[in-house]
Length: 118
Length: 114
Image (tube, rainbow over all chains, first blue to last red; front, side):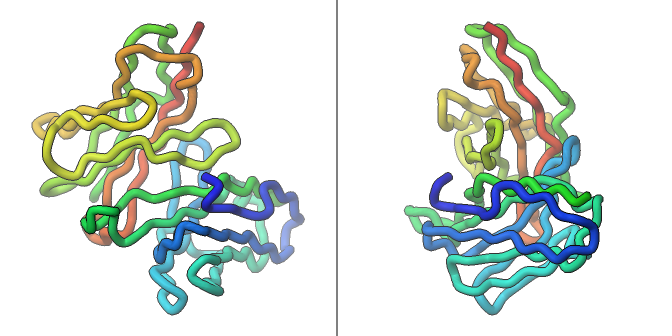
C-alpha cells in the first residue's frame, strides 16, 4: 500500500550495530504498529502507538525501541542488533473509525523491511 | 488464551477449482475476524472482515468467508481459483483484552496450479 512507506526495504547489518527502520504514512491514521514476521510464526507485535505521546509495548519489545516523531512517522530501533533479529519487519496503521463512524479494527500495512543481522 | 489457528501450512488447488483456506478461532463472546493476503515482497493487504450480521462475508478479489459460530471457524473461500491468487493468507482476530491489537495466525500458503 503506497500510503504506508518503509525505509530501507532491505538492510544487512552486523551484530552489535544500532539500526533504525522508518515508517511514514499519508493515510492520516492515528494508530501505528510495528510487527516482525518470521517463517511459520505469523506476525508478532513489537510496539504500537495511539499518538505521539502514547507508546505501548507489544509481545516482543525486548531489544527494540520506538519513536513517534509525528502522527505520520513511527521509527523502530534496534539498539544492538543480534542475529535472531533477522526477520521481515512491517509497519501498519489503523484509523479509529471507519467512514460510517463505527470503530475500525483493520490495519493497513507497509511493504516491509527485510533485515539481516550477520 | 485468545488465538487463531490455520491448520494447513499449504493448500494446493488447480486453476478454476474452488478453494478453501481454513481458520478456527478461540475467543470468548463474539469475535471480530479478518483475512489478509500477502503477495511476494509486499505487505499484508486487507481482504475482508466479520464483525456482526450475515455469516457470509464478501471481500476483495472475489473472496468470501463464512463465519460459523458453532464450529468456531472463519474459512476463506473462492468459487474459482486463479493462478494470481497464489500468495500467503493470514487469518486474524481482534484481541478482546486489548481491542487495538490483532492476533494473527501463522499463515497458509495457497498455490494455484495452471
